[in-house]
Structure formats: structure tokens, C-alpha cells
Amino acid sequence: MQQVYKTPPNPADMQRAERKIRFAGTLGLVLFGLVVGVAYFLLPTFASFPAELAERLAFAARASAVVLFCVLVAVGMVASIRRVSSQDIGGSAAGPPSEKLSIYVAFLQNTLEQAVLAVGFYFAYASLVAGAWLALIPVSVAFFVVGRALFLRGYRRGVEGRALGMVLTMTPVIVGYPAVFILMVLDWF
Image 1 (spheres, rainbow, N blue to C red):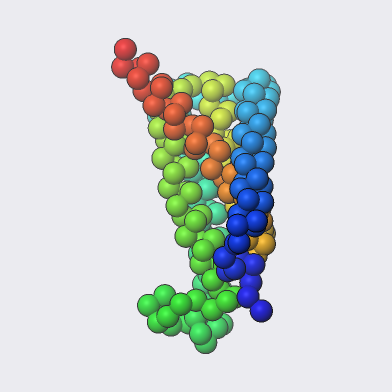
Image 2: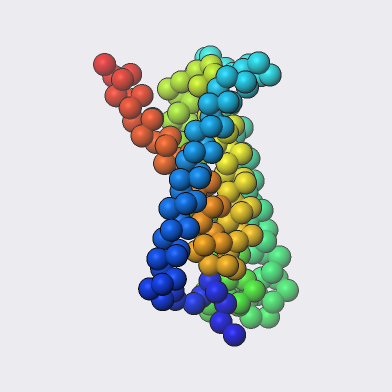
């Protein structure tokens, strides 16, 4: 029996998958906008955000540590399966991963890719804004962690199962990098 995530979709499945991806994308964008708006106004009442550049960069570093911890967890999942599997213990160079390991390898690779994008965004953004605008960073971290959990949980159900997790992970950087570029241009003039 072939797994759903390994089965190529037929045209009808592709249309359904595209609709689900668009729905997840819209939902993720709306949720992100709402949560950022609420965080901008509420988080400063509970915590103070740094104003000086060094402190803002330290704030970004601490946020990045949470994201990189997700990478560590993914590495640990791969390692824990690999060390008890005779098919997988030889490592990636010894052959393709077993059925059990393949999802975790894909999750690790995707999490690492997303972490690089997220960490770069946090530092660039923190170098350009101060105060309540920094609320975007903890919101982005929360979206990253929840997105990764949903992505892994839904992986076996194929693209439709992964869609919301992927969207929640990616929305902060998709929105954030253009904001960074606009802020950089405004800063130059």
C-alpha cells in the first residue's frame, strides 16, 4: 500500500489540493494579520521591547534560539529513528531512508530551510525597528513553532495535510521580508 504523501496526484486531486492550499494561505495571512495587530497593541502592556540596536539584536538572537531549537528537535527525531533502524543506520550516503524515516528527513530538511529564512528575517527586522513593532518577532516565532507541529502532523496526508503548517511557518517571512526591504529603502532616504 503506497502512502498518500508518495502518491502522485491526479488532475482532480490537484484541483482540490490547490483549493486547500489557497484556503490555507488565505487563512494563514488573515490569522497573521490579526495576531500581529493584537500583539502590537497588547504585548507592550505585558513586556517592554528594546529600543537600542544591541538590545534589539539580542532580542532577535533569543527569538532565533527558539526556531533553531525546532531544528534540533527535528535532528533528534531523525537520529533517534536512524540509530535503531538497520536500513537507516548507515546514514544518507548508504541509501534512501526507510518508509518510517523518510517523513522525518523531509521534515528536518524543510525545517532547516524555514529556520534560515526566519532567523535572517528576525535579525534584519530587529535592526530596523524598535518598540512595539518588535512584537512581530514573537508572533513570528509562535507561528513558526505551531506551523512546524502542524506540518509534521499532517505530512502523511499529503500536500493537503501539510498546507496549513507550511503556510503558518512561511507567512511571517513572506510578509516580513518585503517589510524589511521597504524599511531599508526608507532608512536610506
